[in-house]
Length: 166
Image (cartoon, rainbow, N blue to C red):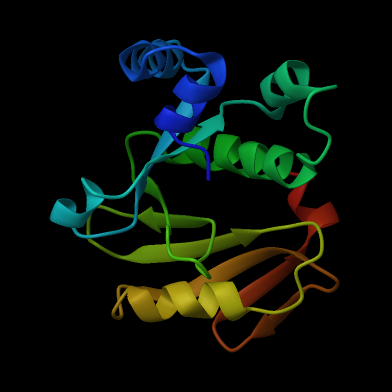
């Protein structure tokens, strides 16, 4: 994954400059910062995930430089929808574990919902992995990008076409 250190090294800038730029982009609401899904003391050691507030920004900045960013555009779009809907109502987190889901929504009463997003998602492995990590706080998950609308155990599988109607 990309870190401030990687960006600083690539652009030949100091890490402090990169961190200030990222902070400005967050304050301008061009970037969304998702804290890692972990206990508070572990959040300090893990990296936050940065997503653009709109997939259009990612596309405009990276078009011609990085060709394989379709999945990230979709993640940006879903993050935008969740961020707008949940603003000041719940926390939007990311599961940093290797086989974890994309998003964890944590409500003030400590209940959680797991989200996984992709273009072709037919297995619920990542959602189940994160469900186990929640230790019962999450009772169900949502997987966007399946072939059919269906319920598998406690995971709602939604075709991408349906999710894009939101």
